[in-house]
Image (cartoon, rainbow, N blue to C red; front, side, top):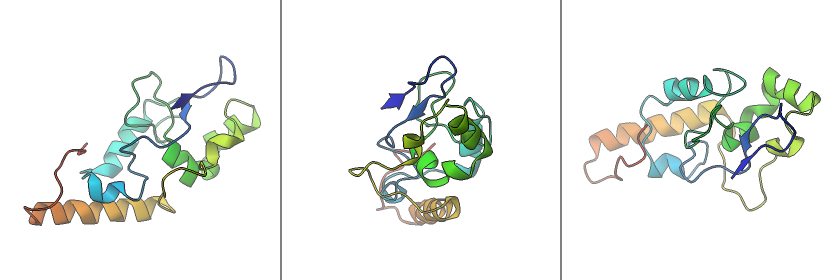
Length: 135
């Protein structure tokens, strides 16, 4: 669910992680994202905050909405997010996980390690989950 409710200068963001969000713990087993680090940087280049931000990979908007999973895990540490919070372009609720939302990784390295591990297993396990969500 995209959100942009703070005027013309508002930064678009997802309120909840999308179904295949790589920041969601369960998705490390369901989807195999090869080269996820490079992908996250690439999709971030199309956000209002630039490449050091992470946009939602399922976004069809321009600029790309900020990823809810990323905002909820790392957003508070990002200088552009802090500036946007301070000047009202992004509401504080964008950083709070929903009570009914999925479990997210605690930090970027945990997420990257989980996806790397499942991608390696998929390459060696012909009977493993499909490569449906590979980016």
